[in-house]
Amino acid sequence: MSSSNERDSMSPVRRALQPEPVVVEESSRWVYYHKPIIIMVIGGLLFTAGTVIAFLYFSRVGRVPYALGPVCLSIGLMFLVTGLVWVPVIRQKVRKGLIREMYSRRLPI
Image 1 (cartoon, rainbow, N blue to C red):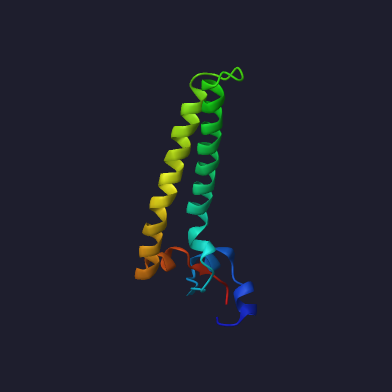
Image 2: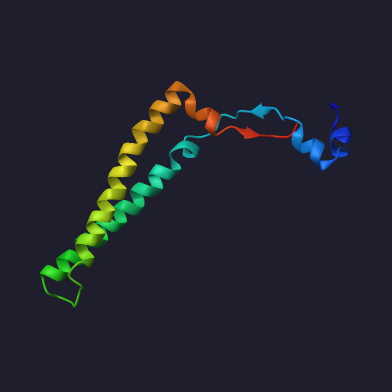
């Protein structure tokens, strides 16, 4: 059952039960680092927004709710630190080769 015509004619149950080879592709670093980068960007934006909102509140320029600035500051800082800690963890896993197994895809023959 090595030809693709025989594989296409198999029943769906048999096709699901037959193991497929795992092919590991070398890809760009974006595959590994896109989540922490996105988290850091969101954290930076929230931290900046919190700083601006807190400045507006304390300078009494506009009618800004009291807790909005500190909440944005704290959530933004939490996201930023989480992303900054996540990058070295991923770097260490990539060096050990552990993460390649997680990101490997099954490709049809």
